[in-house]
Image (cartoon, rainbow, N blue to C red; front, side):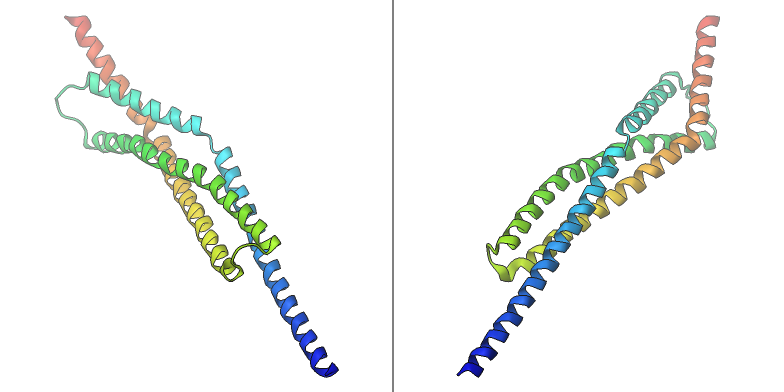
Length: 188
């Protein structure tokens, strides 16, 4: 009888230690996801939105200047191509700002859910068989935010790079049109 009791006790201890190891693994993974979300949030905070708004406003003003002073005579194809790219910069920045807003909303929500899940796991609350599924689901959400922000920063960098490459030329063209228009008005 004592042998059966000893075997039963050993099995119970082994199962308990496996459950503890599983629990510790879930908690570690939740902590890692929280750290990743903190890192993503820091990237968002360091992102200078004012610079992007300034670029967008500058593009808008230069395009307005071109439209106001454009004469329907011929335009150089290179300038026309740059104007199309220039207009696309503003559109790209505006579309991409929605991705930033989605990420800013998602990160606190995911962190709250992770906090609740961590609390449940630490206290053995809820359906223990679903812990793995819940952790996997949250991992997928963190991955989505990470991918969204990677896309956001890639698109933002492309827009800023395009702006830096062509802004001076487009602005010079806009100023040239404005001067030409003013000269014609002065001659009348």
